[in-house]
Length: 131
Image (cartoon, helix red, strand yellow):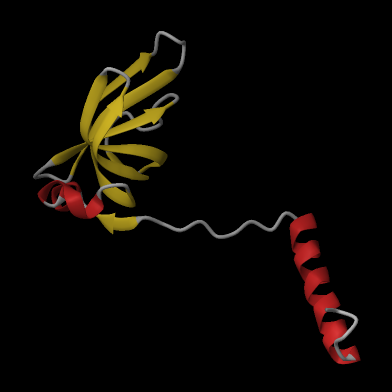
């Protein structure tokens, strides 16, 4: 209990609480964890190891397809190639990288059931950066 603590302990508790509240008021954001840096070939050679993991993959954009769902949501798919193998990438919105190199951060899923559709070995991108 705060009342039972010594005066220095109460001051420390109040100052710690004040620092936490100040950080919240100033909008301090926790640093986001980056995904495991890997390659399409490494993921595809051992998909169980990366299943449901956040990954960061760099490669060349191939087979870009932009679509709009029946519900009106824009999305796109692309293959990201490391020169040997390519992995499928899905993301909502419009593609920022049409050709060339890209870095993709997102969650890899070995098997994903979406309604009546099943998708295999796909990264759902949270960030795509063109190179």
